[in-house]
Length: 236
Image (cartoon, rainbow, N blue to C red; front, side, top):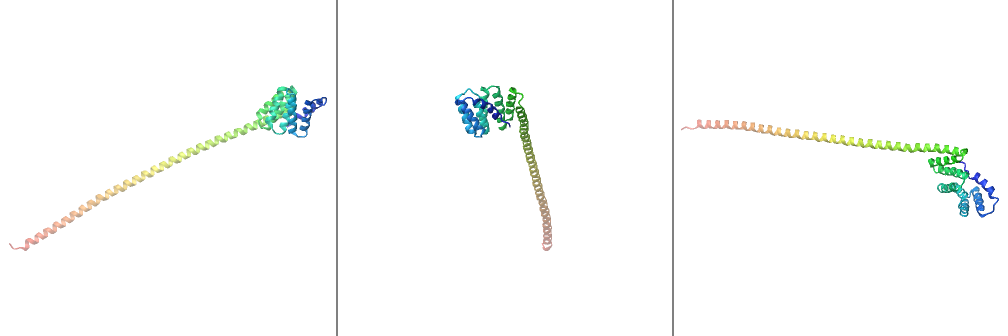
């Protein structure tokens, strides 16, 4: 993404060369450190410049740019917000733009879109503003699609859990039916055995009675034979 900081400060620096006051000195030193990639020293110089003239937007803007380059996007946005409150249209527009860049880097695309729109509201002709707005809108759309995919995955997972729950319940019902069937069969087998045992007992009793009757007949028969023999063997 194109950073508006260097272009902005090149204009400020030309005006600053005409003044030797401490504020301008800190701003110039901050810019030199920034240009050379020493963002910590740049941040410190802009901080000191802001102490000297707290009503100026430039120190906040410069500090925000240095923090942005240090990948401290949250603190950078705080400084850009302060610059927006204090600055004129030019610095406000660039501050909104750079805020959008910081939000874009932090993957906060919806907020980045708002910042770019605010920048275009001040300067609608800036091509960089328009380009980055299009990029943020595209990223926002992709992010929304990605957020919807886990939702679909959650639905599928919940459906799988419901299916599993129903399957487990069906399995339990089937197991219960199988167990009831086994219990019924076992009970029927027990009843059959009991009936068979009772039937066998009745048959045994009949057989015993029949044998007893046969034995009784045999005994009576023998007794008669004995009596007959005794009658014929005596002489009265």
